[in-house]
Length: 401
Image 1 (cartoon, rainbow, N blue to C red):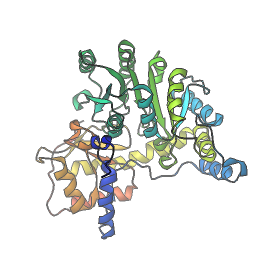
Image 2 (image 1 turned 90 degrees about the vertical axis):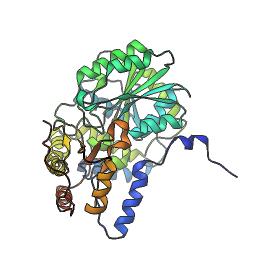
Image 3 (image 1 turned 45 degrees about the horizontal axis):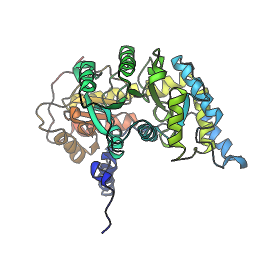
Image 4 (image 1 turned 180 degrees about the vertical axis):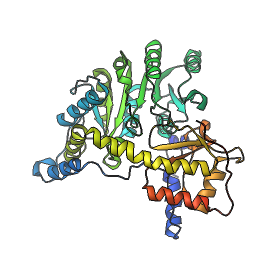
C-alpha cells in the first residue's frame, strides 16, 4: 500500500485551513458567522496600483516568463521603499530579492541555511509556519519564550543558555516585530541586541517585518542597525501595508552573498510572478503617499480597534493597549479552564470566529486574538452578538494599562 512521506507525520493541516471548513459549513447552514480570525486586509490597494496592473495586462508582450530575481523596476522600488521609510541604503541589483509572499521566503531561507538535524530558534508564541516548515525540512525546532511581562521581547539570557548548550547547533533564528500574534512593538534596543547575538554566535537572524505600518507611527527595520546586513535577513510584505494579500508580493533584504544563496534555491523552485503584478507593486511602493498609509494603516485600524477592545472587555479579557499590528491580543479570564472553552462558545453561540492563542505555541494557550480585518459595522455586530449571549460571559476585570 502506498504511504505518504514520513515528513507528513511531523505536521498537521494548518489550523485555519481546517477551521475554515467548519466555518464554511456553518455558513452553509445559514449561521452567518462573523470572522474576526484571519489577518487578510479587506480594503483594496491604491487606485494607481490597480490601474498599473490593468495597463500592463493589456500589453501583448507582458505575459511571458519573468526573471526569478524580479524585474529591475520592482527591485529598485523595493530599495527605494527601504530608503524612504527606514533610511536604509540597499543595492537593488544584489541586496533585494522579491518573494512570492513571506511563506515562500521562510521555505527558501531554511533550505539555503539549515541542514537536516540542525537547529532553528523559533519564538513561542509565534507564526506557526516557522515551526511547520522547519519540521518539514528536517530541522530541529528549539523554542525561545516570549512573555507578556517582558513586552513579548526575547529573553537574551535564555537565548545564551540555549546556544551555549553542548548539544547546540543553531543556524537560524526567527524573529517578528511588530510581533504577531501578540502585538509586541518593535524596539531598536531589541534589534541591536539581536544583531550582537547573531554576530557573537554565527547565527543568521531573520526578522519578519510585515506589520511595521499597521497602527504604528514609527516604522523601524532591523537593517537600521550597524552590521545587520552582514549577518541578518529581513522580510517585508505588501500584503498588510499595501492591502495586497492575494497578490503575493514580499521582499527579502540582506547582503549580496546571502541573497545569492537564497536565489539559488528560489530559481530551482519557482519563476518570477506576472509582470503586471510586479510593475503594479513597484507603483504602490513608489507612489503611495504618507497620507494614504495613514488613512489605510492607522486611522482605519484605529477606529476598528475601539470595537475590538470593547469585545475584549466584554469577554473579561485583559490586554495591552500599546499593541501594534492588525490584531488585538488578550489574556482570557482565569474562570476558563481552556481557551477553546471560550472561542468555541463564541463561535457556536454568538456566531463569531476568533482565534485561540494556542495555535501560536504553548505560551499562547491563555490568550485570544481578534483580527481587525473586518468593517467597523461587522465588528460592532460581533460585539452585540457576544453581549447578548444567554449565558453572560465573565466581566469586570479592568484592562491592563
